[in-house]
Length: 114
Image (cartoon, rainbow, N blue to C red; front, side, top):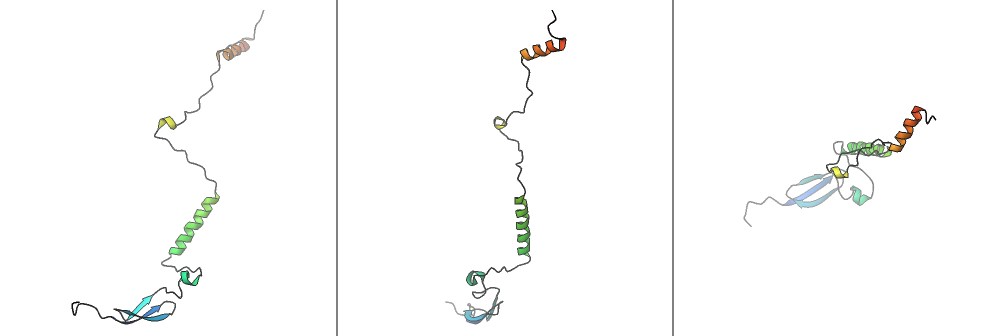
């Protein structure tokens, strides 16, 4: 190792936001942290949310809006298809058969008069 290029390695005190402190080795004398093994939800088993700049509130609002949306019935949107073969033809009027048109014409004339 080259002499004089490495930082000093000293005893450091780590201070957590919950108040827990412990000693370790570092290049800084005091280290501050937000979570430690005494207060982290994974280790404690409690459901505690650490809010950072309102992210939890935004998440809860989004989830609330999503559950309200899920309660409403979903109506599928009609979309056009690029493949015209997959698109059903539009409904057409039913054309009367020639026999039906003849029967209508006779009914309008008054039927057979002999």
